[in-house]
Image (cartoon, rainbow, N blue to C red; front, side, top):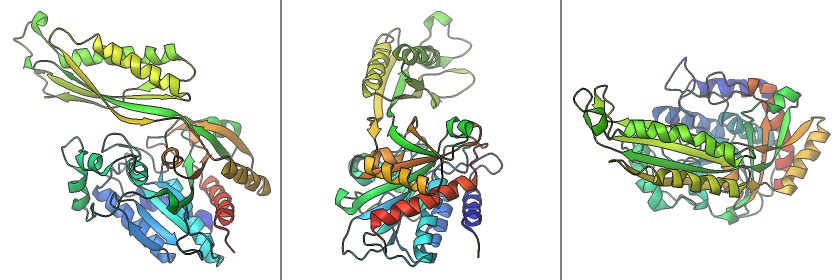
Length: 409
């Protein structure tokens, strides 16, 4: 019989092969063929454990171990399974695999929970295909309305509905999951930073998650021939966009207290080598541990854009995502600490600089989030790596916590 570590390694390796960029990291966009292969694998493993498997109208996957309490709220455990382009094998899947292994321990030990235990694999946390991110969890709690969901399109103009249907998913199924069906949510994630590894500490217990805002800016100018349009008669959208992007970092520096700002996506139209760009669309990601700093930087960005609407340049901005900083549940944090002490695992209390599905679900249920070390602090790149021993620690921690939360016998 395989050990937990061996099973974890096998899961991670198998899921990592479902990528659109073999040999160059993990590219698994929501509702892609790689998504389909991964979801089929996850559902197969859920069924092998005897879980009741279903998908909602967003494509989130649930595997339920029924409890003895009729219609009792579930203890959910899991993470997301999508990726950024050319990302790593551990961001998201490590948490899904942890959830599968916790359920496996319940089954192996013939534990019968009072409250149901549900493994959940969530879609589109990264926002790599459809703007905003955290789409699976936001849709679950009603923070993304059905109308907004139907309006979303990727950069190719493909809608969420058409993309779902292309891989056999049913977008007409219920999407919202009411709070009364959730007793708690547990998530394991790689740290995506250097602190745990540098201190040689195997577990990070997250106290709070930073607030974040994502904006999409459109700069419109006028197209023209690269050789025949004089420099003083141009309304070059890309030149203006570059000027604006170059000014953004100082806004975060001026705000201070760990505030950060990033432009990670930029699309140029018509994208011809000999054509003056007439439209540029770029993203702005703003994060801080205090909501006031996020709000301040949003205002500064909008003021900056207002000052640059001139000389044939039009600028518009839309806010695609806003999440307040979130404090996580004290009771679950205490359970995790007690479990770490019992297992003789050192831990570090810390905040998360990245957004997670846990922050969305914390609005409607009690949430716990733990980190495991990331090698060299790297993430969102092919070099991303975490030790399966640390994931196995997470399985043991959440197995004990889940037993208490479900009151398993």
